[in-house]
Amino acid sequence: MTEDKDALLQRYRDARHELLAAIDGLTDAQLSERSLDGWSVKDHLAHLATWDDVRADEVARISAGHQSAWQMTDEQDAAFNEMTYALRQDLSVDQVRWELATSRRKLLDAIAAASPSGLDSGRYAVSSLVSTHEQEHTGWIKRWRAEKGI
Image 1: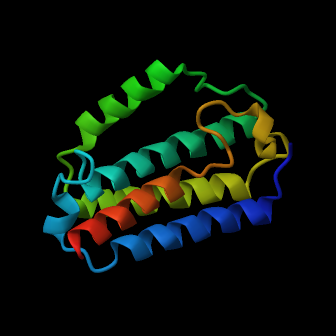
Image 2: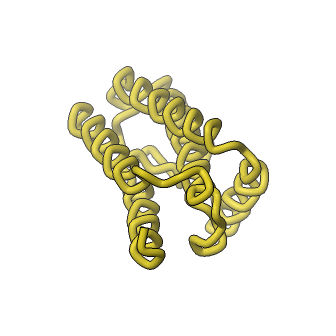
């Protein structure tokens, strides 16, 4: 199914706006506290940035007429997430904020430049073009804030 480019861009902008609202006002210490299901909020943000990078590359790849490079099993997906968590967990809050902004800009640029094949959601694997991934993490962060009373 070919996605509407403008609607897709707006969906990603809206998801990011909601995520940023969910972390608004948190201190660096709160962002770094590993009390959100074993991860910190910062870890969740770094995770989302990783997947924006993957997704942006996939949009460019598929727009160029190539196939998805991210055909993974559930086990491979879990292992990738654990590996990238381990590699990024010690990044500073400032760097994670930079990673988050840069990766999203890269994704939006890739979608804006996407060919019709790049907008065909059926051509994507684990990196799916249309995703609720960010909304899931935003929900977890909101729940965490409510539980912590912050």
